[in-house]
Amino acid sequence: MTFGDVNGDGLADLVLACPQGGSFGQGEILVVFGHTAANRVLHLWSGEAPAASIEGKAGGSLFGSWVLAPGDLDGDAFADIVTAGRIREDPIVDETYILFGRDAWPEVAEIYQELAQRTALARLSFGGGYARLAGDLDHDGFADFWMTAEERSTPQVAAFFGDSLRARFPEPAGYVFDLNGDSGFGDTASGLGDVNGDRWSDVVVGANALVRPMSAWIVLGSPDGFRETATLPELSAEGRVLRIRDTPADSSKIGYTVGAAGDFDGDGLADAIVVDKMGGRDFEGVAYVLFGSQDWGRKVNEVEVRESPARKLSLRGAYAYDEMGFAAGLGDVNGDGFSDLAAWTVRTGFERDPDAYSRGNMVLGTASPPGEILLRELSGYDGFSVTVLGGAGEVRSMAGGDFDGDGVDDVALRVILGSEDAVIVLFGKKTDAPFIRGDANMDGKVDISDAIATLGYLFLGGLERICLDAADANDDGEVNISDPIYLLEHLFLGGKPPPPPYPEAGLDPTADELDCRAAGPRG
Image (tube, one colour):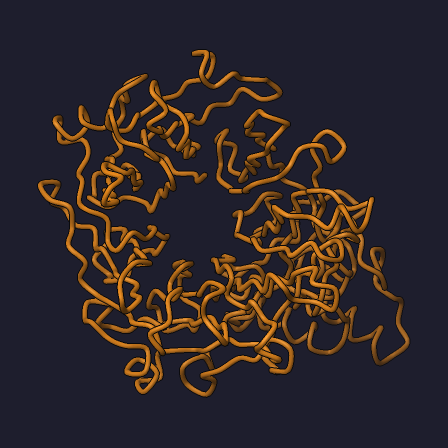
C-alpha cells in the first residue's frame, strides 16, 4: 500500500496491492483516486469509489504481490507505479512492471492491454526481489528506485534510474553487494533524502533474519550518484557507509525493516528508521529513529543503537512479545511542519497479555524529541494509537499522503476484519503544537540560548530554526526585540516569568497570528 498522485490532479492516490484479486485470482492492483469526500464507507469493488483496477496476465498469479509509487520516473509530471507478478510456476518466473501515470485511467484493464498501449513496461524480475523507494539517486531530476535481489548467489541491491524515454524498461545501472555473501542483504531498503547535509540523496539498506549478525547500512550519496557498481567494503573505504548495529548481536534483529522518517526533528536533515523486531527486554520490538548528522561519513561511520552517543529516538512496542517489526514515515499529519511516523506490528503478544491487541501508532514529530517513547503510553501530545473495532481488526500496514488535498497528510491503515480486507483513511488536521513560552530554539528548556536564537532570527539571518510562538516571550502577538529583553530580565534580573504555557509545555491560550511550526531564517 502506498500513496502517489498518478493522475496529476494534485491529490495523493492510494495504490493497493491485491495479489489474490482479479477476475480469475491472478492478482490486481487497485488505484483509489484521491478526493474530498470524508466520513464515508466505500465498497472498493462496487464502483462507488473513483478507482482503477489493473489485473495480471490470464494464467498468471500473484500480480500485485507488492506495489511502489516511486514518483515521476519519466518526467511527464505524473507519478508512476512499479509492481510485479508471476507468469510461470515451474520454473518460477516473475516479471516487474512500470505503469505510467496519466490523467485518464481505465476502470478495469489487464496488464497485457497496458503493455500493448505502451502505458506500461515489463522485464523479468531482478533476482526475485522487491522494488523499494529511492528518490533521485543520480541527480538528473527523474525519480529512481531500488530493487533487491533475493534469489541471486551474491545478494544485491540494484538501482534503476528513471529517464525521459518510455520505450524500454531501464536496466540496472548500479549495484551494492552484501558484506559477507549471506542471503537477505537488501531485503528491505529505502531512500532517505539528505541525511548529512551534503545535498546528495542517501539510502538505508537492511537485511532479513538469515544474516548473522544482523545490521543495517546507510549508504551515502555523492556527486557521482549511484551509477557505478560497488561493494559495501569499497564504499566503506570511501567513507560512504554508516553501519548500524546492536549488541548483543546474537538476539538482535536490527535492520529487520528500515525506512525514511522524513525530517522528524525539523533540523533540515533527513532522518532514518531502523527496526529491531526482537528489541527490548521482553521482545516488544524497538524502532530506532536516527537523526541525520553532518558527522555521518565524516567523523562517524558506525552507530551502535544502545550505546552510541548519536542522537536517536527509541520507539518501544506496546506489549511484551509484540515483536513490533514495522515503522514508516507518514508525512505531516497535523500540519505543524514536522514529519510524523507510524509504527505497528502484525503479530501481537495477545496470548501472553490479554490487554494486547493490534494497533496503529502515530508518533508526532518535534524539535525536542525525547530519547524514548513507550507506544502504549502515547499522550496525544507526542502521538496516539488507533485500534479497529476494539482491537478485533488487525493492522497490516500504514502509509501517509494528502488524499483529500487540504495540505495536511492523511493516514491509511490496511486492516483485516475477520475474513475481510479493508482500508481506513484517517484525515489529517492542522492543529496547534504544544510549546514552552520562551523556548525559542525548541530544545525543551528556557535559557540564554533562546534569547540568542531569537536575536539571531531577528538581526543576523541565523540558520537556527525557531518556534515563533515560543519566541514571543511576552505574549504580545509579535516577535521583536522586546522578547529577548523580556526573557533575559526574567532569567537574570528577577523579572516576570513568561506567560503560559510556562514552565510546562502546553497550547497557546491567547489568539494571535503566530504558530509553533519550525521557522527558518528571517527573510
